[in-house]
Image 1 (cartoon, rainbow, N blue to C red):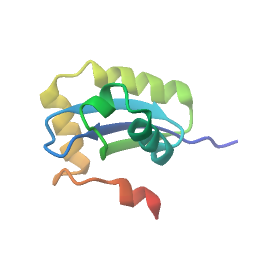
Image 2 (tube, rainbow, N blue to C red):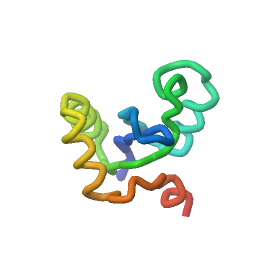
Image 3 (cartoon, rainbow, N blue to C red):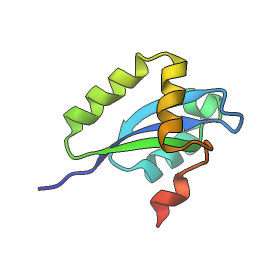
Length: 96
């Protein structure tokens, strides 16, 4: 059986703040961040998807999330730019 899990990095419009999370549905989770009107992502307007990775096992996704959260901002930025050099909002990539 195949399962879908993702780690994702959200940022604000200025790309000055990052939020890292794990989910099984990125589109739904981003909407939840917007609608909840509380929490870090909402407080800092982190609604642009700038990076994500796909996993088939939740344990691997959680492990990767924890790993990235420990990294320096420079290392996180380099990871994002390795797949998204223009720091675009990738949300439309997932909608197709």
